[in-house]
Length: 412
Image: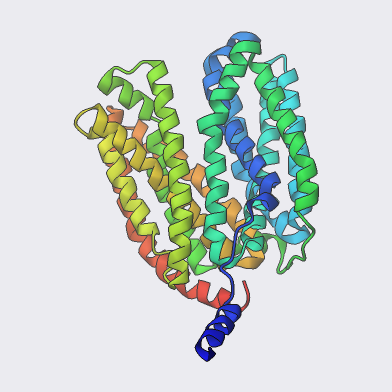
């Protein structure tokens, strides 16, 4: 009887395993889905948009450039505002701008107005995005932080898998403006959830403005992570820029078939994000965070090599799947690291991850485009930079492990 009572008492004293309560994050998860849809939606609509406003497709593509450029430049500054003045204010301001920008896009009658609306959308995402990642990182239980961030990244990728095809169907049935009206309505519908679920939280303002923006670069673990992030995405998204052209040339795939490859890309990203979050939590619990970063970078090298040079379509598509499983896992681990190492600068660090991702994409695309044969360029630049990122992650892991332990001691 004593043994039974001792066992019951021990079970009662054992803390329950932390749980990530998804419903409490419904508002920000919905926004991540909409941001993912927005990011990838314009490209398939370019021919329709160009014809509607009477410009070339190349000119219409400036709308994509406006979004990416404004996000990359403004995100660190807006991340600082989130760290200084709280997630709720920045998130709600960004969401309101996102509603206005999509409504403006739907109402645009010429290229100038459309480019300005897309630039405003980039500003909105730059304000809300880092605030969302910081909010999840600081409110989810530490033991399941990776799974929480992985779910957010999976929802962002689901915007490509589900949101983009739905937007395309809506555009085909009611015109391209209908897709932007749908984004407007969906974002507005998320606002009541955000008001209930994102509570004001104390912040930790420290240092001058410029120094605070550069805080991530002064932290050894984050500085190395950002450099690795640049190399990884020069391989990852730089090579992805030419994936359609490479597969089309190798296997004579139609535009419709390449669209299905895009769904495979999104599915791999979703799977990698969820897997990366779960495995990352286990690694952190064992004191090995971020131990999986070298694995994701090596898997990226294998995936790119198979996709652009593997014998046969089946192996090539398997390479695409592995490629984006690696991409999803890596990004989730990086967001977890940024949300754990420097709690006072979570949003700013997350913003720098996105900025260096875009910078790496531009560098990688430029380097691959310099080759006469983009398949050879994708293979050489993609694999070499992925291996360089794998080598660099060893130092990130060592620094990150030490900094994470310090954060845990201080209640991060």
